[in-house]
Length: 117
Image (cartoon, rainbow, N blue to C red; front, side, top):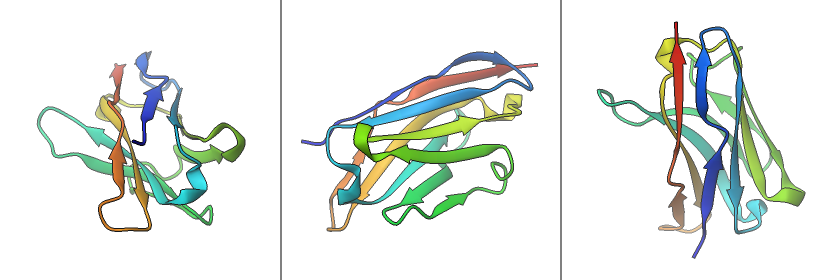
């Protein structure tokens, strides 16, 4: 059973920064993609950023230029550096990991990010 654990969320003022971590119990090279999603009470879960097995990154338009996704394979951890935060970035952030086989998808429990103006 794969376990993903997010950490690093918290309360921050607009313009501030946070770094989220997603620690995996499995070697992250065994995943095709590892993604970060934002969940707000009024909206569906939205893809914010992701990193592929090859290290290729992708970002939602709202995250480009402000967020950076990276990984430390030795620590089996993926990070999301979030800068220039705005209240719209408030939500629960989930780590999602997808393997190469159908059904091999996993979610962490999430970490709360609250940005106040």
